[in-house]
Image (cartoon, rainbow, N blue to C red; front, side, top):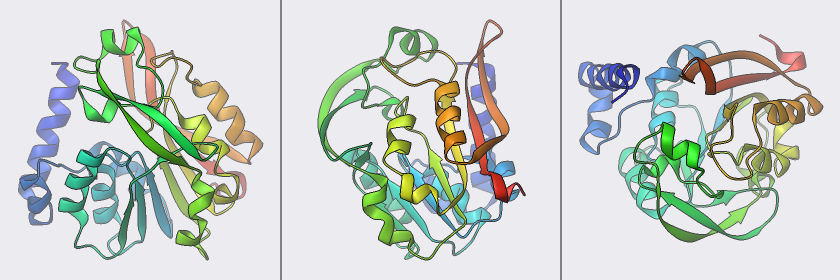
Length: 245
């Protein structure tokens, strides 16, 4: 196991054990995504849209950064959604929608990874498998795909949303289906790749260019992953240009 990954897992376990609020989630095998904690604490938002919610790790980090804040999460894999509901099902301010997202409505093939959080609507590439162990495809699943804008009533009246994207190369497609939603967002926080890990994915420069066309500017980069000195992927925070604070 990568040493940095091992350190992160140990830090998550330590954080979960030290804070009773995390114990219930830990019992379901879910620890908070503490690698995002510093970024979350720096933002002022009135809601969160968690796209690619998996088992609720990021939602859990948001919940303790902003107690009581409204969170709408999206996760298309039924087994992961079951765990998400075990963790967050009693929180009336958290809404989970079992759907994939893209730029148009329909159905699509989800490529299931051995590591569920690496599953994607794009075929898993050879470099992804080489760099990240246990991410090879183990099956496929037909899922419904909707546009983020189809769910706009869920955040009606909010104007400082944080849109988080962790969709394994499908970021640009999700954003193209979110033009109305983006007008209600203060921030977009997206995991983007600098090299192709999934077949046909848009890389960070293309995602950044699209967001710039929607008046978002890159504010920071973190959680960088390298291979032999080459930046592979990172989490990028974009802020609406008139809200750079």
